[in-house]
Length: 457
Image 1 (tube, rainbow, N blue to C red):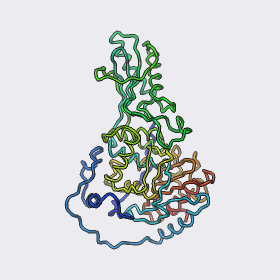
Image 2: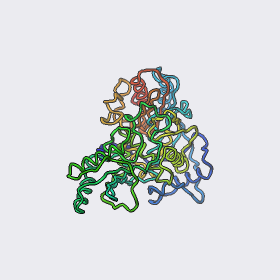
Image 3: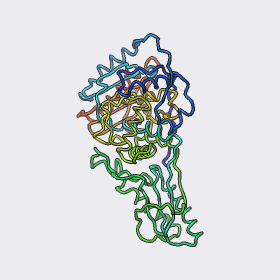
Image 4: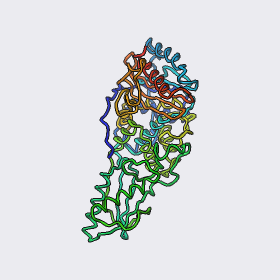
């Protein structure tokens, strides 16, 4: 199992007020009313359950109208907005920049620069993928890899576990060998079954240079995260080698087959909980885990385990379950490697704002925990990536929790930080098309986050 990094310091949020949208949602008055009711009444444990949480809230009755006076931004927020208005024009960021800052408590917009403009979000797509996966499958969900036997063949059956290790595979092989020897068998054929995920294995918008290194063709079986063209056969061959080492003769080459219902179960391995997997995926921005989660989310919602099936479920979860606007939202994969993906900064901020609401903590908490922290070694905001290390942003080390995103021609940074007033802010910044050095672009982005934090005054 992939090593799970220890939890980073997690922000503590006070219960938020009623969410105020910057513009009317397109998801219908009934859903808006249900969301308002959900904010006004206690949430039962059943409402927080994993798969059942996929259903749209159905509130009944009315709730008291919020008559409290609306307060404008305080002096600290006004200064932050003024600084951002200047710093977003930094030449390193180019001219195609989108940014939003929200007050986490109220959801009110504190600053908006082309926030509704849909840009290529890169790995910020993983925020949407994680939200849907945890909502549909539940944070305690585990993925199962099996070994079955029939007609002289051991079949390794993929269950969408992208964290399966060689040690896990060795345990499966040991159980299989024990069973074979108990039955008096000394030779066996080996097959792999990865039929859980149908083709295509490559997403719309992936450049040929992305695979198999940045992302492997998506299959339901892999070992040790190997970046190869056929991860299933690669895992089967590793399994066969372990059988051979244990004294069992493997007859012929590893083949691809579909396990039969009559095959005898030999062994199984269950992954860590989904919450742990999401945590790791976000810390390291693991593209392969993200793509597997998209497929498994589709299955969990009763859809085909394809890119299209997965992205349809993500859209449904965001809009129907959480009321997030999908205006100008285009998603073609789970990792954000697709150059066809387009998501406005306003939408990314709305997704992150969900994490500040206590009623979502049990289901979505691992997203908040998994956001890289500025200056955190081993994460994509760590010093090894040159983040938060210049004169303007180093003051924010340890203070920013955010998801990075980097492709050629696209850099994004979306997350949370406490402002100068001590209140939590949600922010999202996305730039496309800058011709500056990528490290310079990231420095400029880090500076924007430090501005929201208020340490760069």
